[in-house]
Image 1 (cartoon, one colour):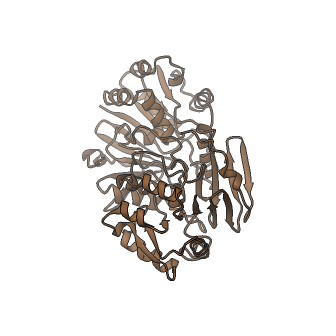
Image 2 (cartoon, chains in turn orange, cyan):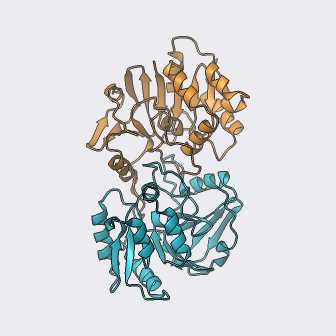
Image 3 (cartoon, helix red, strand yellow):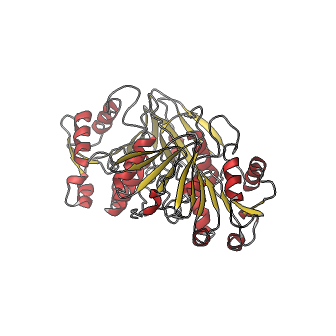
Length: 244
Length: 244
């Protein structure tokens, strides 16, 4: 069992914070087999603002109605909070900070296990990266060293959030596509789903669908395929070819 | 003893590959206390092209005259090649690949030791990141997992190469300044020298100078200082406040 909503970004275009995600998150939570009364927010990717502030922003922006939003950082017993959670919402920020802190709290295994048992998982940006097999396709700066690059592997492919064709004139850093091509050169059996801002993947067990109004991309060492907006892409869940 | 030339980038503006670096590298090598006849290139940050091709490009672009450019990847005994080297030139590419491969070859300690004994060290981009205490301020994607984020610590501050003020309209990924501010939030005792393309640091023992025609920036948790083009900045070498 697996219920996932993996969002590229908190913002899309010129809309406000989490505005574009709100209908997707509400629909995803309301479609659960049993009514959800509380969701657990994981703010641990946040660096520039404190966790309290982060929680306040998300509570105000998501406006979940009858669903109470608790936060992992308010719990004295984080593992128990994960065990009791009815849904997880993992916010964006820095992927290295998120992964380091979850390893420090010894929560990676229990999150993986519970989501595998059907606990609904929502994540945007770093929270979407966390759902892949490794953090290797994050866009974030490695500001802290995690014990491992392994992440939750809730899907068998890598995710690149905030995907953009971004070669800027006059600057000689690598473009996003060049970075991902280098990843695939060193990891030729891996696959990367590149999600432009405003797109998301929704998994319901063996079904996977691309949400949003823009296409996404499947990047492989052998080449690139377009994933059309609003279409199923269940095949991405079928084979597990990532070596690590 | 320490002789370092740390360059932000291989390219600057619309000039060709390594063109802007050539006079700096030639002058740096010719200023050595004994004549240098051979330099050792380390191509191990290269991912998208093979090491042979990378070496050919650098040989053609640098045009070192009487100095022969060998490459580490051509050596059957890399540690011995480092021990015998008269100068090191570490090319750019992906910092995670560079660091992983040098750890795999067990070369980090011997490089650090020899450069500490006065072996001239030249590096651009990833090769400049390698000279700092950690790879935590690289711009590169973490496409492979190195055994450690610790790097050579040939200078006591972090380096951010290809520095740019780069918040692009309509995209919601973090800007470079936001990324480095997050690094300093989690590492408040660290300092980062942000080098725009076309700038370099030259260290001669206790002296440090910013080369190039643009200013650079010293980023600290307490605030930012401008490092004026062409000026000494020896003070950066004085205190070692980085905790890791």
